Image (cartoon, rainbow, N blue to C red; front, top):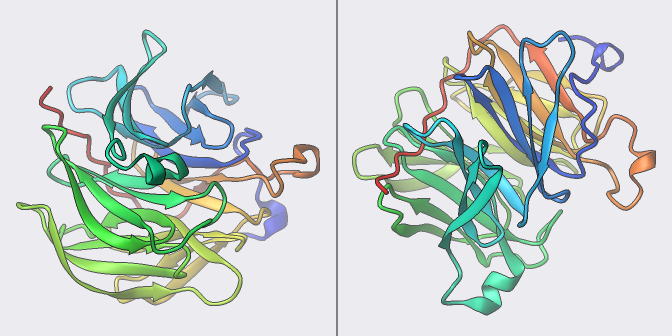
Length: 303
């Protein structure tokens, strides 16, 4: 897919911890988060030059999803739970506090990555720490339903990361970076239940699994933190191809563009305390990868 020397950023965004890219089809824009920088950004896909707009956020925010029937709003995963972002008002409104009954855990926890299932439920996992697990095995995977009821679906997690589903919605993939593992579960789309946890892919060496996206053919595209790459992994768990990047902290891929045939990839800076030495780290990259993605579902909210 080309040498590292040929790969150039789409946007030199300067993100400390770029994450959560989502393609907004209604406006033909890419939206993403800088977790450590506490900002949300967007840019037109078809612009001659990227026209990045960036807005500050009052809380650490980590993952983005659209809301069905509410085109001017997004639902964000945050350091406290979930919040509504409004583009028109440039406003931020918390709606769910996950750790209100456990302030000790809540003070050190935050959501990290997530996704929306076919029924419009919001799945998001937590971690303790900013760039790594300050404590292991004390985080969880949550499911937020349309009535804003919260359900703990998995415990004993260390660094919750990428989430996605097979095209037939029978398998859910979930990465725990600390375990260097992408887990697979049997998924019941009607009830939103998961079972039969098993290893789908295990990364070896220094790199850790980060965000992921599943294409229309069922391949999992997995970002590698400290791995300089995005892997394309077959439904059988075998590496099909490797997309090399000139930066080490590759955080999250997503499919976008009108035909969903482009892969957008966020990254993080090597050392957030010394950004002037980071080079291309923190940029957003854009690739043609020869396969189409699945449309992302929107959160269905009754309120």
